[in-house]
Length: 421
Image (cartoon, rainbow, N blue to C red; front, side, top):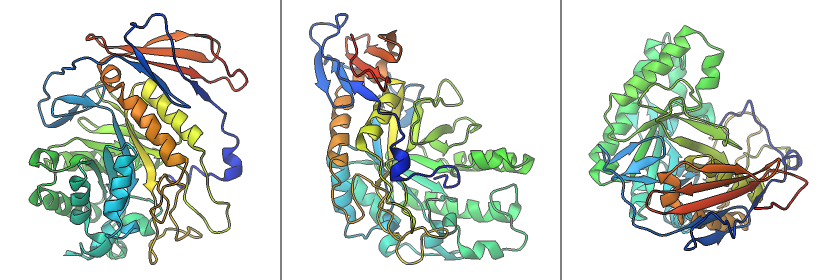
């Protein structure tokens, strides 16, 4: 999370435009076999046919349309659940509710300062039992996006860095600095080695399909110099050298080198494009609300606004959406970062701090996922034909060669609530 550039309160959120996404019930150009899947904010029309894709060169890869798993392009809905922000007893229930809500992937950071309490001495027990958490996700037959960082921000104490790190002689964080790079590489290698030894990568039969190096470094590097740019390139090269067998990503890193995929974080990402035309559009943090600060109103993002943003991202070619957070949980002990960041990390998420469903947010998003998933074949197999139906209204129609069809009718006009199709 980029806490310095974005703030949100209930009053500010009222300023978001009331954007309507109107259901397509009949489109004359569509085949008569099409059936409509209607949501409050999104409508998709699809014909069911046999779907074939060429095999991928690896169990998990990507092309410009999507992440490819076992030879099939996938639209993936993901949710952030941070294992140290809940208890191990809660994990199975949280993951089940995420799956019931239509998610395919659980995304989590790895919390360096919770694992390496002193140099070379590691802790992976209790709330910090990373392997146990990932195996819970595996048991639920979901995938994992493992954001190793190891800088994570996340409104977490010291951004996830161990306190001892700042006492290493000659160290300078997140730049081309040898003491920092040595410590960082050692921890990243430790995590990757653990995942391999426990057979948790997808090619080993595990759930991990994506890994992330660094975190939102692009905005930092913009104000830095050559050493910062060199560090970003080093981080990418170091990560790829570890041979995880799954794609690496870097969020908010526009110059992420191949084969790493750069991804978007924000309230809206429909205007985002990856830095190369052969990489997929991925949204690693769709902010479901915001973190709680003492003295401020409780943040709230209406689900209508969130669901419209997600549907709009999909219709513009997006294929991976992660909700940050899907369950926020609690900053136990003194793990929250900065002044006035509350112990509650509820985040107005679809599953609240205590593990209960937050309605209507959870149910509304579930319906959205069902509708979009019903059209997955058409959406990942073709580019849309876009036609205008007014100053701020557009129709996106996706058709695959095998006959699958999907349509989105979007209305960005805050005054006119009807669209002539």
